[in-house]
Length: 172
Image 1 (spheres, rainbow, N blue to C red):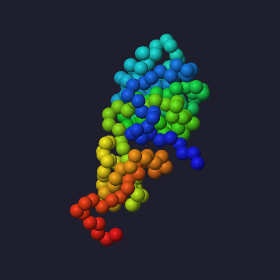
Image 2: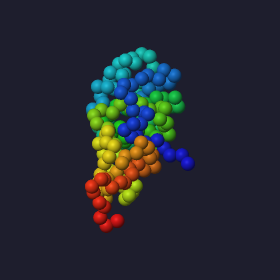
Image 3: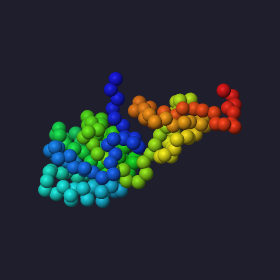
Image 4: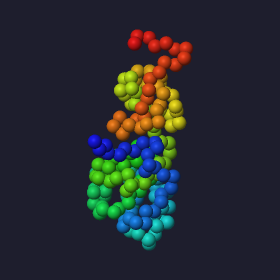
């Protein structure tokens, strides 16, 4: 079974700095206000070497325009996303929906990344601190040990419930 890629805090598409993929025929750089400086710096670095198309967005209201730009590209185009977390996830998802693979996308996240854990007790997803190893489920209040595995299907790291020392579970 094939599962489409999703953007998560340790995704292979997230980079600190864009790297030109010289084997590609064209580059498309999509940024929001937060990623504008990063995108501008990268495009000026590329000036005259390969065709570059830039798209600056204002957020969710530009969804149709982003989709149009992505779908109008030929095979062999490399996509670069410089944006805050929510906008980056939205752009990445639109790209994957249009048929892009992770190899065709590089993403620079401006600001904090978001990390999610999937509770194996109540089957809900909660947001957790970026480097947390233990968390409390927002839904059932279970203590969770955050595993190293990210579930693309559940869109979160697997959270294994446990009873902390000195705390007894009531009602289960």
